[in-house]
Image (cartoon, helix red, strand yellow):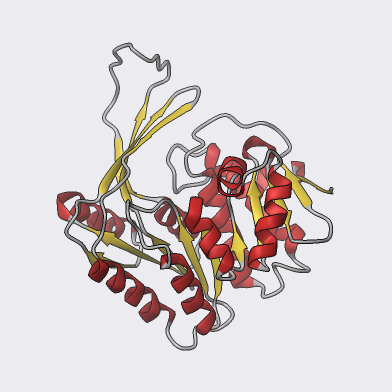
Length: 309
């Protein structure tokens, strides 16, 4: 079982605009609209690949109803907490490149945050066991309490589960200090959180705070696996891929969670294989039309290289 927690879910609206030009008018086909947010995208990829998942998220207002309906239509098991604020909307304009416009979301009340934490605890059970992974992904709405992710990491560990956190800013640092097993920032997020000019040096510092693994997303250059000491591993795709980059990082997180759920040694002796799978799934997401889906990753595997640095 892989649980995904999304603090700031969304209705994702995706338009195909092959020749998008800022400041111009464009006639387009009707958009694709479906439940999104990084944790939801992770769950979609996992479900598509035959893994057992559960989406945990707030949902509110008319958009929240549509969000729930879409999860049901996709066959995604969920534990949604009804909240007062409307679920936010994100917009993706997909052409030669992808332009994203993301609403920030609305604050939740202390009672609503408590209900969400309770939903995670209920799904984790006691004990959850080594094959259970909790993935906490995405942005947070304004005024999110700083103890949110530490509480979720602690709940996962208390249940014997592995905690993966993909977020940014102070919440990334708080998750590290709570001992998250895997952190997955990108190079911009890690420098924003820790300062400096070298993402690898910053990743070392973050790994020292967490005691776990930092998977540093390097965009088209792949992923780096960084601990507080010892060699770093850099997994590179065999070629540059063009397409919809929205959701590529989420696919890498999904691959990581799937590897850990299947193999308790995935973060140690199985790390090379985990990295290959994560880079392949991430590339396959770029080739898919919508976030939360991937094409067959198998053809991408032979071109992936892994080096120490």
